[in-house]
Amino acid sequence: MTAQVLWMNIPLMTLAFGVWVGVPLWLVLRHPDRHPAESRSVPAYLRETRPKRPARIQARAYDGQRGLVAM
Image: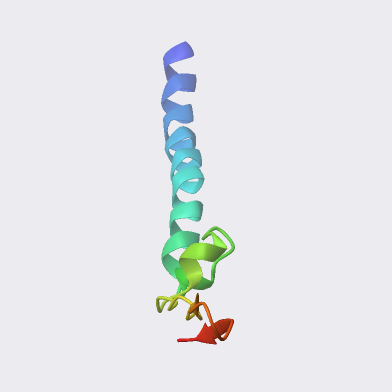
């Protein structure tokens, strides 16, 4: 009797395991991330694709007579 119950449960266990593994795998394969750069999991500083140029610095010098002179 016990062996018969065991052999009846083996197909049910394989079916349950197949559903448990197969459904998430199917969802991942069916709906992949098309644009991972736009995902919320990527930090904002990594989303920028082109590098930013630093701002220009306006240097000023003192010449001793005319005050501050733009260079």
